Image (cartoon, rainbow, N blue to C red):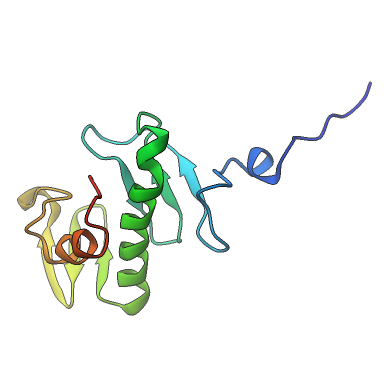
Length: 116
């Protein structure tokens, strides 16, 4: 019985090689309706499988801004809250991805074609 190696390291570890960078892997995950991608605190970007290939790199660029915000210490979150520059708000009181949110304003300004 022969052992067959996966064709790529991305296949082996479950990430999208063409969208990933060193230290910031991109993985597919079913996300909530209306959410194309999300950045987690460990540096992983999750992208919804329904996002068309032509829109994926823009969605990842948008999430990269959020990774940078977290690295700077400007953005943090828990399951229930989001903290931006020291001010904490309940997630249930905001619309995730809303253009009016200060952390989203920066991301949309840096990646104008992004759709969250």
